[in-house]
Amino acid sequence: QKINRILERFSNAYVKDNAQLTQMTADQVEKVAIMLVTLNTANHNTQVKTKFTLEAFVQILKDEGLPLEQSKMEQFFHAVDKEPFKAAYRNSEKVYLRLAKDPEQIRRTMAGLVVDIDMELLKKGCVFTKFGRQ
Image (cartoon, rainbow, N blue to C red; front, side):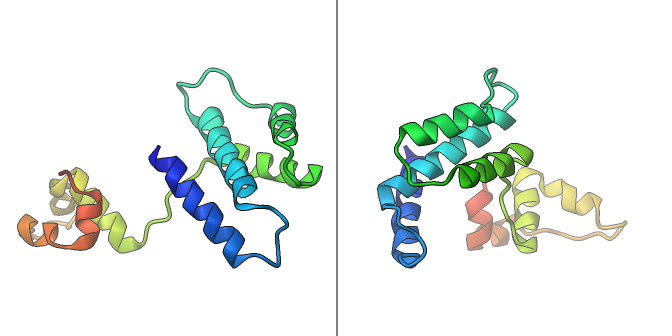
């Protein structure tokens, strides 16, 4: 549900911001985005037994009536099939993510320096609460 809302908002913004570059509607962009997320999950999640083939992926997009060229559909497939989606974190977010998982990790990697980490102060930071436990 949450992913669908994100993809819907993305699709609307994409069409609005790229009106001169695309002939696709927001609904069509959303269908492509959903298919790319589905392809990523199916082909990179070890718990999913049935993987998408190029032919099946292209056929689904064609069945949806999406105005994409065959070469573009194949390009999408190969890009997602080759490499799973990864979150693009800034360096500061990576630190906060590690802290949220294990505050002791930072202490262990400080090369013998004794550093007190004030967890209450860190919890007040907006970046930390994005990854912190509630």
